[in-house]
Structures are given as C-alpha cells and as structure tokens.
Image (tube, rainbow, N blue to C red; front, side):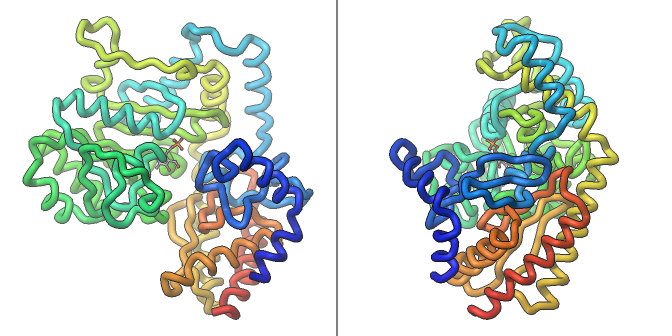
Length: 421
Ligand code: PLP
C-alpha cells in the first residue's frame, strides 16, 4: 500500500491522463497488457534507450515494447529512410517495388518461406496462416499449446483450457481448437491421435513468449516436425518474438524447418506489421493467376512507409552480427539477474532466450502479483522501464553499463520484496 501511495504521489500527470482516458476508452486504454493498477504511466517521448513520462521521469527502456521495439526510440537510419519515403507520398492503393524488396529479405532469411504475404499484426498473420493451412489440407482442426499466445484475438478463440496466461480475460469464442501440452510430444500425440485425420494445423511458438519465456525443447519441435509429416498436417512456427534470436529465427538456430512461419513486430521497422509465409505449394493459393485462388486484401498490407522501414531495418540494422551481440547481451543479463537474485535470497528467477527475458516470482500463488508489483515500483523509482508482469526485452541502444545498472537496481528493488515476505 505504501508503495502504491508513493507511486500515486510521484505521478500526478499520468493519473490525470488516465482519468481522462477512461471517458472514451474502456479502462483507459486499448492494450490490456499495458494497463497496470492503480493507473498506468503515460509516456510523452523517447530517444535512444530512454523514455520520459508525463511527469518528467526518465527511464531506461528494458521493455522494448514487448520485443517489437528492438531499434530503440529514435534510430537515425530508420528516421532518415522513413522521412525520405514520406517525401514520396503515403498510400497509393497500388504496388510499389518496396513490397517485393521486403518479401525477398524475409524469404531469404527464413528457410520455411518460399513465398510470403503481409498483414498488419502478428495476430492477423497467425489467423491468415491458420486459415491458409486449413484450406490447403481441407481439414478443420487446429492444434495450439497450453500457455501459447498467438495474438489477442486468437487468445479469445483458443481459451477455455488450462494454463495460458491469457485465459482469464478471454471471450472464449468457440472454435475448433485442440489445446495440447507444451514441450510434451507424447501428450500431444495422445490428444491428437484420435482425430488426426481432421487436424490441418499444428501452430507453435519456438519459445512461449507471453506464456512466460519458456523455450521449446528442440526434441519437442523435432517431434512435432515428424508428427505433422506423419499425419499430413501443416506445421507453423509462430516466430513473432523468436525471430529476434537470429536472422532466420529460432528455426535456423535449431535447423528445424516448419511448413509455414509467422512474423511481425520489428520487421515493420517500427510500424504495424505481420507476415505469414510458407512453402510454395501452400502459399501459391493466393496467386490470382490461378483460377482457384483465394482472396486476401488489407488496405495497409503494403504500406510504402512500412515496406521501406522494414526493408531498411533488415538491410542496415538487423545484421547477423548485431543480432548475435544483442542476444549475447540478453544472455548475460539473464545470468547476472539469476546469480544476483540467488545471492540476495530474492524469490525471483529469470527465464527466456537471448534478448527476451521473463522475471518469474516463486512465492506462493497469492503473493506473486504483489511481489512483482513491488519489484516494478522499485525499478520505476530507480529509472528502469519494464512490464509490471516482469517481461523484459533488450534493444540495440542498451549498453553493458545499462545492463549492470539494471541488475543492481533489481537486487535493491527485490530487497523490499524479501523484507515484505
Ligand atoms: N505471436 C506471438 C508469439 C506474440 O508474442 C504476439 C504479440 O505479442 C503475437 C503473435 C501477436 O502479434 P500482434 O500483437 O502484432 O498482433
């Protein structure tokens, strides 16, 4: 309570903005993950690795917009590319060469993508990938995994079963989903086996992202690769988050090639983006030269600004070397956090891969949220931006010094939790 009170006193402008926002937005916002109680902080501006809130406090950004903000807040290469593109006009309702430029980059990076289509979010990419695969297989059932997150709309479709952190707030729209156990091939086969002839798709994250940064066991992904071949289903990797781990995503790190892949977030160079791609025999269904083709539109699917920003980012920023550096730094942060939490007897543990990290609290269930909230308030006071639920992601602007300072602040903030528990 004292921490909440101090937070309220420190942030009067954010509180006022929140109250005003509730007049026109249910609960004051439009992204559930961002709304924290008693009220969320409002950000006014950002530059480099820093964001500044409405009350003038500055934070080093260790959230990176849940992985999409990989470039930091003011990347000069992107700014120039976008400004130049802007000078040539905004939306044309026509093709530009930038569309195939971005598509070429994605198909050369991801072994599973012969052909690719664009959309405006990762959610949309997953919905389209699923429907494409069902059309291709002429089947009706979709396997997803407990704890999996493929976008907010999709979470409403496949909620209703145990686990997934998105379940309590789901609308529970009925759909033909089977929710299988993550990292458990035998358990998956046992569930799927009796209806295998109806299963058109197995959709899986190579690491559970929103579900707690739990990496897939390579043997699990390999097992799914073999099993989908055996039953004639399409295997889709949702690499919306894990495409950060290497130029061609986790599939290239593991040498496991699915039939289709979805990506999004930072591949739009800072703009709204999603893409789904796959084998030619699957994706050519969108080829209008085919009499039996399927339609797929979307006003902003080929937005020139997005196409230019995404292509420029891949060409000049998302190099193999820079991505490896970023992920090495993330590994160091995770290791340092875990040894610092361990040394301080703090009830936290960091999981994830490379630059994607989740801080978990291992107190009794009822104490987890208050402990994470206390940690969050402590980190804010010390000038670090992260999600209240403990989600972190690095961006290219974060330095080793920032990492060390973050760890120091985390240990200090965790001390309040140790004291309270
Ligand atoms: N898939 C994964 C693995 C994600 O983490 C997310 C978003 O966090 C999505 C899909 C949905 O992407 P978007 O928020 O762009 O719809």
